Length: 183
Image 1 (cartoon, one colour):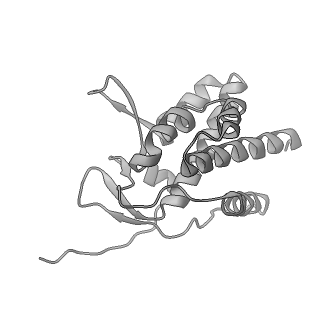
Image 2 (tube, helix red, strand yellow):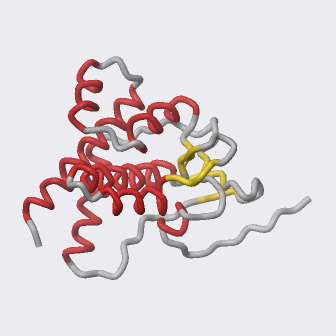
């Protein structure tokens, strides 16, 4: 039995808005990026926009689409997860500025999808079992970063959950600084 391998260029937005969920399988590593990694991503994105570039190359992502409509993320989970965390941090800022409608649109477009079997929403990105619950309850829901810092400071989280929290707190802080700078 042979399987066809193909490639295509797509944006992270298109990937997160695909018809199915983007699932990180159980055999993939937990979230492991530290501040050096996500600070580099933040700086790259910021430089792209300051330079008025039309796009930023996030890197290659390998997906197994044999589980249609869901997509299994084989490679690139750290970058996709970190980009999703950045979107969640933006959502938190919008909510804190009473831009609820815009925050909801951002959430509907990139972060969640309706799940009629659960009578609610389900994240577009499903992390592995070790990170899934923390990610959904604290990051996707756009928890206040001060509360999340309290959880992180208590050091009761797993190492990967702690890294998720730190990344989210960092992204919230960076967006806040960008807002203070103004246009």
